[in-house]
Length: 289
Image 1 (cartoon, one colour):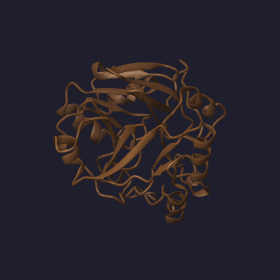
Image 2 (tube, one colour; image 1 turned 90 degrees about the vertical axis):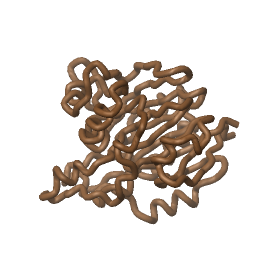
Image 3 (tube, one colour; image 1 turned 120 degrees about the horizontal axis):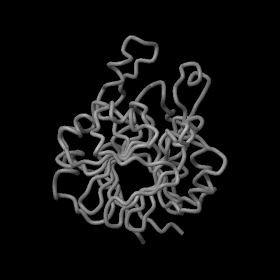
């Protein structure tokens, strides 16, 4: 039985959602901000995961074979937030730890804390985060963020593990434990031996998984790879996860999924196994049954 109910609510804008009392603050709210980025709100606090809210990659790669031109508008600019308590970056690739987004948050919210892989502390500082505001974490560790909110890190393979001499993982997945609901954001990841057992032991209610997959072009162009649609579905089935948000699509033409992939997911969606293809300006309210 699915112990979580997810209600969809159309909102005027993400700015309206995060900055006003129009929408109830009760329960857990999830909003997609493109690519692997999500805003999670609980108890009037914002937890922002892997925000890419700039066009920095297009500027960096404009004259290259892979120009990283955005296919979607920036859904909300960092300056439009009036609060951010925590930013969680799963790894240091610039669409997950974006210097322009991070710098704006650091300037506007001097009390904001940043959860980053311990292996990537120096990179995080280079991107504009004050060292005193960093909360480094490694696979197997947990951090208490607030009353009824903790985060646990597990390894991710993007396409393989990246581990330094201190046995710190550069690629992490985060499991947010919020008021008895476990939300797993894998970061950039592909299946690996032991992943199913790790998350099944914890008991994940909602998985946020990338589905951009991989192909020969990905390898030739050195584009980091992720789960395929089939692999994301298999992981949920094997780990008894009844609610799936897919992501890492619709941002870049070279790192995307097909319309057929999304249509297939829509056909599989059911009450017992919810598959959310998130949309901008749709709020997803999480309710425990």
